[in-house]
Amino acid sequence: MNENLFASFITPTMMGVPVVLMIVMFPTLLFPSPNRLIVNRLISMQQWMINLILKQMMAIHSPKGRTWSLMLISLITFIGTTNLLGLLPHSYTPTTQLSMNLGMAIPLWAGAVITGFRHKTKASLAHFLPQGTPIPLIPMLVIIETISLFIQPMALAVRLTANITAGHLLMHLIGSATLALMSINPTTAFITFIVLILLTILEFAVALIQAYVFTLLVSLYLHDNT
Image (cartoon, rainbow, N blue to C red; front, side, top):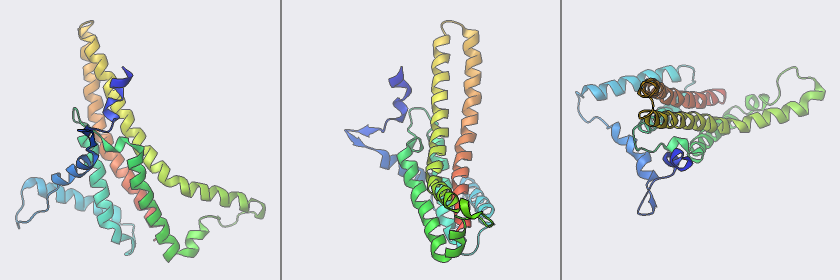
């Protein structure tokens, strides 16, 4: 049972070679670059959603922060598409791996922090010591603020991993319970199946919300340092 429960989180291989790179690059095929003046409705809807999210996310940024627009919109598109594709049967979700999420969170966080220390050195250093702090508390507060700064990328990665993994495990458990109850109590199995459908709809929302939250937090870190 435990092997089946966590089988969907094992990195897939083909002839002993991991195929994670192919899975990670697959979402790019769903967003083709239009090469015509008049595009179809799907591409028009994609462009409208991208522009809407971009305007909402970049409204608070300075001109220097808006140079990250392409990076942030690519990030939310990649995470959202990967999460949605992971809900398909017999599929693999790369965002359930903490290593991959850390690989996205740490460089983006480090880039935002380095940008802040480079262009706003005094303001960045001021975050380590709030104004009006009593002198005896200064060393303790500097240590606490330093730890909280370095925890930020870990919190980003763990939040995304935990939410996606928990949803997949819950769907697997309820699906297994539904199959087991079909021969025992069809009425209870039907109720459980309804719960599974509602949970699947919720997971679709969670997949998009987690992509938005991850990108929004990176955007806020960038806003604090530009």
